[in-house]
Length: 441
Image 1: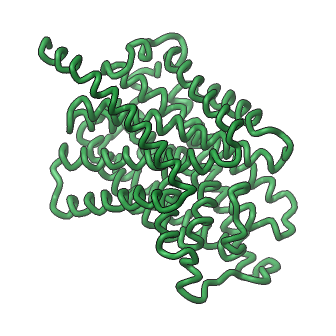
Image 2 (image 1 turned 30 degrees about the vertical axis):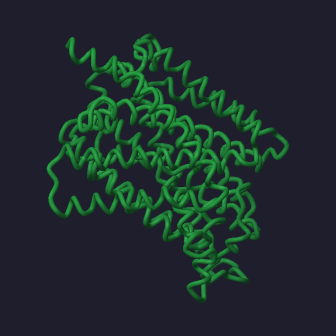
Image 3 (image 1 turned 90 degrees about the vertical axis):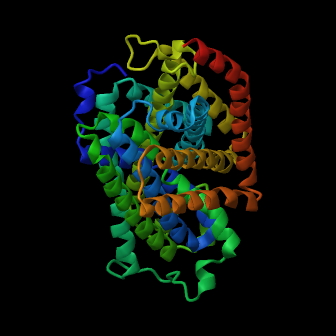
């Protein structure tokens, strides 16, 4: 990004927290949670809490490495320092593919939200419109992008709080009142699909927290890198609280098996009440939320590709600076990735959201696993911190393994394995060249 060093080092901790909210709260929560509810019922609430704990542990590891030594490549650079070039190469490209998959998921979700107003408009046309608008925002530059994301973050928080206030008013009978609240009366009502259902829905809870990696990339612009852990704590604690309350209220207002992936569960919860324009306002907020996380993905894709190119792990042309805020070759590759996402939304409109969401969620967890492992090796950790990081690893592995237990999630698991295999093949091919470069250095 073509910004001066002074511009890039003036961010305060609360601004990074807002940026994190802007990059995190999006379609993963507003639509992805509906898939989790379908698979785990009300137990999705507990899945969100567990995912929030794991997310905090991951960001704590990333923030402590950032505080010790800020790096432009963030988690990719730390993986390389901890385990060698193969780790930096693989984690960088894993993240690139994660963001490409997330873009497809976000474009599909945005198009689904758009059908609330334009039910006959094809998904792919909506996807093109939002992709073009997202590219425009990306090209305004890092400093303005941060400000835009902060504005979006405030709007998203306001939207969730609006839902919480309205839903609570109906639940507690302040306004009208709901006739038939879905209050669980026994443990089976909370876990209607059993332990297996709860296990399989974990991946969608994790997916709702995707975005902290972009926050790690932006953390290098903090005026005081030591404030990175504080910004993460505030951001994640805030998100866990509002996610939990919003989901509980939604599940009190509507039966869990009445929620589907064609509409946000929060819009479904409000549809039985005569609220005038409020559902339209809320749907607009959902679109803003999805759009901002999509722009965050655009930023993550281009930033990590430039970092890979600068380290020789991608063709150098991807780091070639020009007049644009993003190197033109990196921008072109991003546009190609967006094009593929749009084509997939046209070819597989019914299944793509679940498949891509699962695949992206898994790739995200592989990335997070590397972050914790890198921290264990690079920074001095106390006994309590080591236990905390091992708990984080365990939670991530539980999330990954749960995708094998459901046939709807399994294709996403194999998509992620296929991408890992391709990256592994390239590592085997490049190892000889890396060895020669090391000997001649």
